[in-house]
Length: 165
Image 1 (cartoon, rainbow, N blue to C red):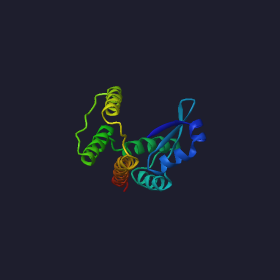
Image 2 (cartoon, one colour; image 1 turned 135 degrees about the vertical axis):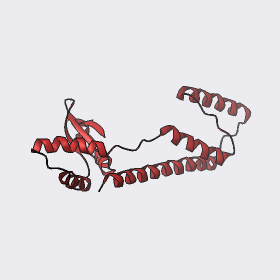
Image 3 (cartoon, rainbow, N blue to C red; image 1 turned 180 degrees about the vertical axis):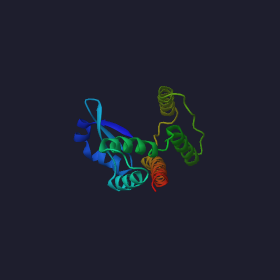
Image 4 (cartoon, one colour; image 1 turned 45 degrees about the horizontal axis):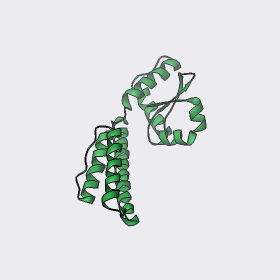
């Protein structure tokens, strides 16, 4: 569940709308205090129906507070492993180039190594990568990003299906 201030929701409603359409809940705050939660209409209808069949709340306030706790417990997002995504992209690049790529412990270490490699390549091979080679490399990267995104969407759908009645 994302928590966003009302001012950001107001100025970036399209972005917030896309977050909600993807199945994620968004809590909106005013002056740091949560004031409302946004979630897709279909999910709201299904959830309210299931929640009400599991036991009637005493008051409207009980229903609101109980429903929020009930929703949070059932809509935990599957964990996304950023490191695994990076490793997968590196493996695909290795397959495409036929070279073993080094793994770095930090971003700074990777940037320094990249700069050293660039300077070395410039000295040893004055011919830069052709536009076609560069386009092929970018195509591979984009295909992998799309595959990762598709897997994330499938995981979200599977998770939402598992919590819906």
